Image (cartoon, rainbow over all chains, first blue to last red; front, side, top):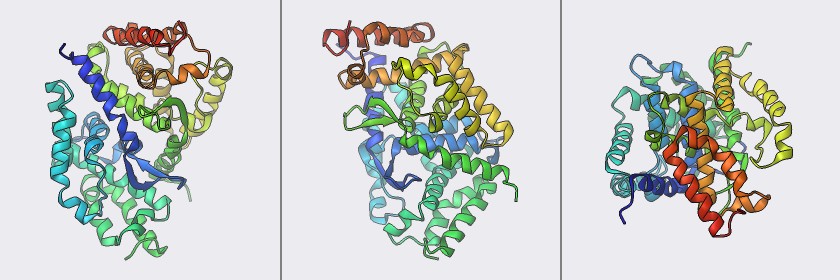
Length: 197
Length: 197
């Protein structure tokens, strides 16, 4: 018997439960353990909502940003998490993620799979106002958790302040008020010896 | 020095990191451990998005439902999670949660704290179309995870199918198509011996 539209949606929603097992480098604020993709996606969405006044709301649609936040990491269920500062892991990231997207979004009814994929690709390209604000918050959330945990993920690799500034650069463009937070965190972390200058 | 608007917002966003440590009774689909509030809130929001076609979209605003999903459990950071079928724990739930709301939403700038509190109260009252669809998905998500884990949380207490039907009743009203899923899960779980008739 052919799978119904609702059955496909439910199978997809069960499959993505695995987001709760995809670990990121970031620690929880209490340092008890590493954060996972589901937790990060929730925190990112809530942060986008609470800080929306710092986006250009004449061009940014918060509702679309929230949907981007909820789906932006889904493909990691199959592709795994690639650490932002892992140069080698980022070499084949695009192909791994494209394959994962085919597989995962392919579970959904075709129209809906296409819709989610388009949303994820828009987020990833960082070209539209919605995607630029979303990308800003996607970067701000781990930056804050990193600061609250004495720069935990910066110690793992050989991350310098230059890398962190480069990774966060979109924030200066999409939410200038929040750029002050980025500057404070980076400069204070250098002062405190948590981050290489 | 008085805390700025942005500082209050950031303090709030750091405080709610604790959502990642508030454990629910529900297990992950792979049964490896219990789910936490941040993971549940993300899964609930994504599920509300994917299944929105089964809501009455002439009356339901998905964007508000997503915001409700993101904030609906925040007060548990101070009040803790109360198991849905714990009669004793539910006796003083309202007062514990009201106190927690005062404290938590009080961290935010006043206008924003009021906005979040109103959204949470609307969700909790289950009277508006947005709140009724949101409450439906809030109940459907653990029901599905429970079914995928052979009725794990139903074994803990003395939960019967009558309790589960009563808890899920809002789904019949707010998303009738999804009620069929509820009926299937409950009846099949009884058949399989995972749930008392």
